[in-house]
Length: 154
Image (tube, rainbow, N blue to C red):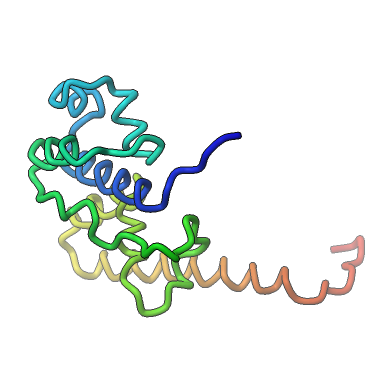
């Protein structure tokens, strides 16, 4: 039977990955600095293997962050391990942390930060909001009663 990673281990691992990627460091380079293989770094980042206290201290020094960084925004013991959409998080800012921990979030954030024209940035935000709203509308329409069948002429 396959054991699923603990939510805290997954969170700590995702924070390791986020900081490593922000520093533009490969798994190989982090592994070399820690005396590990990149596969072991992968297992830490996925939460498959737990990170011991001394190893976490070593990682924090290598990634230039305090050990507490890896626990910021960690789920409480009763939190679900896999949350579905970020938008359902309500007023919590945890969804921002979760998104930035993904490769897409980091790439989007880096690229967006390079755009200095405020008008262009506003248009990008408007585009993303429009796409998100269209997806939400589409999802809502699929949960409603099916529409009447269209004629073959359409």
